[in-house]
Picture 1 (cartoon, rainbow, N blue to C red):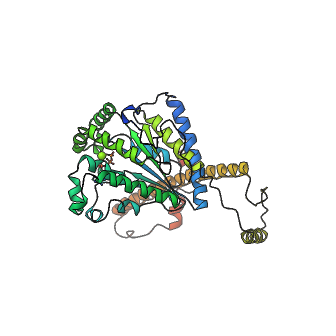
Picture 2: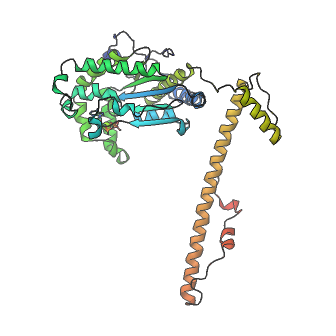
Picture 3: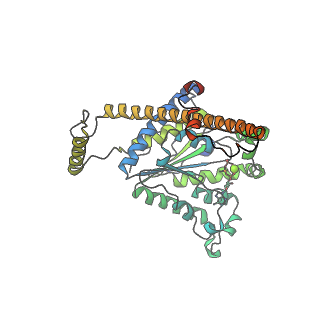
Amino acid sequence: MPKPVSSPHLVPFDGSFKLRKAPTRPREDPGKEECRARLAAATERLYDLQRRLYADDRYSVLAVFQAMDAAGKDSTIRHVLTGVNPAGCQVYGFKRPSPEEYDHDFLWRTAKRLPERGRIGVFNRSYYESVLVVRVHPEFLDGEKLPKRLVTKRIWDERLESIREHERHLARNGTVVVKFWLNVSQAEQLNRFRDRLGDPAKNWKFSAGDLAERALWPKYMEAYEAALNGTSREWAPWYAIPADDKPYMRMVVAEVLADTLEGLGVDYPPLTAEQKAELEEARRDLGVTLEAADPDGAPADEEREAKDKKEKKKDKKDKKRGDKAKHKDKKRKGDKDKHKDKKRKGEETAGEETAGEEQPAGEERSAGEGDEAAAPPG
Ligand code: ATP
Ligand code: MG
């Protein structure tokens, strides 16, 4: 099992975490510029590490995000996963359970969404809601349709035990569990609610229920403290991330995630003798010579990095080219429509003889083709 990443925000494993002492702002603020630069560096690393994780195909990574409303779960997930191949990661948001989900135990719906080997899975809220929002609103237990005799005072400790065991089971089977609690202050939450209410583009993010939950802040904090103390363990550590400063929060999450993946030591799998022979044959057939390589046939590290960079550059170029082509297509279509309009107008004035006559396809195509000057820059 990989060791948790060392961090000032790591929640201890002995139940001694004091939530009221956990900072909501960085103790030492490196400043926006540095946070942005380090976030970019960490996402670059994640890009490379995720490819190795995928090629290795043995571990999976589960990143759990929990927080009060408006702490920035969505935007953090977006920033941290920027640049990671979408095919190699999956994000699920868990809302109030559906009737079908209520017909099962509380781990069922999330178990179905666990990441496959080689992938990074992100839970935006998770099974932890069953010891957070449900603990704050015990009436929600009625909806869960549990046999009455199982609903006792011990239910929260029992649930925490189930979670601990579940996560240990995952860890033993190759899922690396890493959990982030985005610790926003009550004052900053209010600022963000005001922002959501005042900005039409953010109105949709606000729901009246958010204020009701905010009023239950102390109860939520109690529930969070119990959950973090009960389940931060070596095999599934929690990190309590100061969330009042968004650039800092995003940087720390990205770095912890990248360091966690790095700790796995995953790499591209070495080729078997048979695969090497096959490749050799294919090279001969296609007249390709192998670039300088290490004795196992895998490219040396620096070379691989250079290659990856080249590929990334190429991807960017391809994208640019694609955008340009799309633009041209649009333009061509616009020209075509204009042409049709003109033609139609012409037909309207010229009478019925010419109606229905089709423009030769070749002519239409030539309208925008090779017309570089018509394409916008970039
Ligand atoms: P945002 O931060 O953008 O508001 P969100 O994650 O809060 O996103 P919402 O649709 O606003 O998304 O809220 C989902 C709601 O579902 C939360 O209030 C959460 O507590 C609730 N929920 C999630 N799981 C459960 C559960 N097991 N039982 C009851 N409520 C749950
Ligand atoms: Mg919400």
